Length: 263
Image (tube, rainbow, N blue to C red):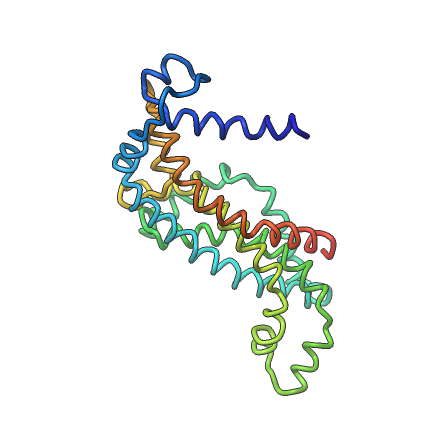
């Protein structure tokens, strides 16, 4: 276990080491400790990457997308869990969602690029939000289906008898009971969408709308690579999501385990 921990922490160690080195020190030895903590890479990285604009764009595409994912996938998972056995169409949608999880993004990359360019949604943060939401619904719904099945149907039937319609029953009775899995879905997708690269690379090509991951990509050219600055910006971009993960990791473990077992 200790060896595995060291193996996985080594890249982070190298990133921290390189971020605090000068260019001559990086060229001299990759593994050597820096003679002093050089902060120039961070200042240069913030300026070159337009860091605060990039982190603003990342927040704009991440958090609204996560909110839409939670709302849409919870309703979708609820519908599949409650009506999948008696409705052929809904059962087919469930199978379609599961099948879509096996499709690599590289297969749909060119059609997505052409469709979004035709709809004038390229270089548009709203288009990015729609794409991130759409590609995340299937997995999130899968998690919700297993959790909804654990909620007794008697609670919903009592609400219907008391005068609630289907939408009121879901939002006032069922959805509050889905808090553990909703927290899991939100936590997972904040991390995944924050670090998304493939979708952002093909949809956000103008400098003013690029997210953090795409900004970091441009520190590496065909013949040059500014490792110190690149790793400095990488460490800065990791801080928010690492803090978020530390607070939410218990919900991630509980929600995935519950959804997997009950599904």
